[in-house]
Image (cartoon, rainbow, N blue to C red; front, top):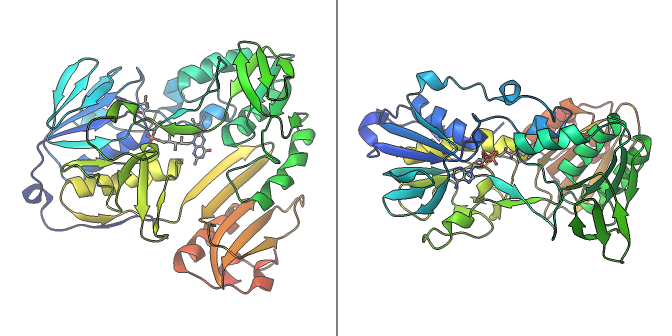
Length: 402
Ligand SMILES: Cc1cc2nc3c(=O)[nH]c(=O)nc-3n(C[C@H](O)[C@H](O)[C@H](O)COP(=O)(O)OP(=O)(O)OC[C@H]3O[C@@H](n4cnc5c(N)ncnc54)[C@H](O)[C@@H]3O)c2cc1C
């Protein structure tokens, strides 16, 4: 499977001129960047600026039943003591200058920079909870108690996952979705199949219900109706955390613009993870993937690029979600697909999948409770495979031999 192609050239330490690297952002991408820089031979000064007061941790568990966990339990497994890194927790970069960063703790000089500031949840006018970090999760988790009335705005990934947790905790859960179906980020043929999952989980899903304002315990809908709740979670997507870069001269467009080497348009500045909009030669377009797999693997390429090595990041996109008793996994990019094949029967206990074809080529796949199909499908998408549609539709035929 193509995840990242890093061609390591000779003796890294003689190749790279950077001696004072700063990584901005203490999430998965930032932590991985630190590890990769050291792992790839960088032995100069290394500083990690992390706005949150916590050691870098994993976010996916926060919406999947672990809302009240201590951060130690979800902390990333990073040998900080061995990495010789100046770890500045609770320090936020506020402005990017040519050779220094302005931060909440004063100026920090650099000659090489990794931007890994992630994303921030979108909000609605008014208030309401959002979920991004461990502090949000803890506060929200304490309120999801038996009998609490919970309104979740948005039937996307985080909304569906938190609704699942809330229903399991005995809450009375309503999910408001502005669109015709849940999972609006996926091709439209998919969402309708997720509708029955809500009723099965005891959740009231209201479609074409657009929330326009939240006031503590009240949600106002576009049609004027008002719902009252004990807890309101606004889960309507996220946007790259790049406001602090405005006016610095770096190219931005719904994220930090990077090429396939994860280089920005500024010399000595690379970026990775949720904050980037990266050029994909594979798809001849710019992608904002905003999922865990990109934050895990992209930093290897960002670090290599900063160290003067030839490296390209252009994998088949991948993400997953655990919601309403199902594991959904996605691989590929469906834009330009002209046929969709249903593999198995939705609702079947054996799981099912959708496969998108562009001409004869498999370009994307969504699996429901079929992780093996996804692994094989992602590999086949990467290879540009041209499966036999009838065999692909047959659950008895492994995806790798369809
Ligand atoms: C609740 C939740 C559940 C998720 N579940 C899944 C899932 O099931 N599957 C999946 O594929 N993906 C999932 N994701 C997405 C995945 O977690 C993200 O793609 C990943 O965390 C991105 O990592 P990152 O390091 O780029 O950004 P982040 O994790 O957002 O980390 C960025 C860090 O940078 C800090 N920062 C921002 N600005 C500054 C600044 N100016 N100075 C210093 N520090 C700064 C932020 O405070 C933050 O700590 C989920 C996300 C959330 C929030």
